[in-house]
Amino acid sequence: MANLKVGKVIHFYDKIGVAVAELSADLAVGDDILFSRGGEEVLRQKVESIQIEHQKLDSAKKGDTIGLKVEGEVKEGAEIFKVQ
Image (cartoon, rainbow, N blue to C red; front, side, top):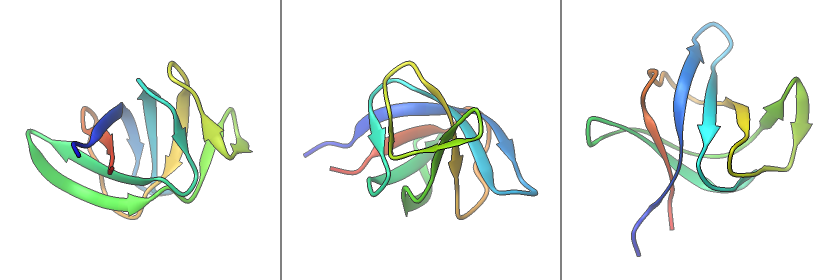
């Protein structure tokens, strides 16, 4: 089954390891995600934390702009896919 694109990184805070992402599909804590840039896999991890306006949530919906704790560096423009 193909991976589902769920969003795009619009900013990355390297000091705190947080990516700001605009979602194009729903995302939840516990989902396996993959960051890809230029068709190359950059990072793969499980969603540990989602925040909107500094409030922790268990899930976010299409159209939300979220803060996402990441385990490595991801650049602006990286696409986010939910691993099926």
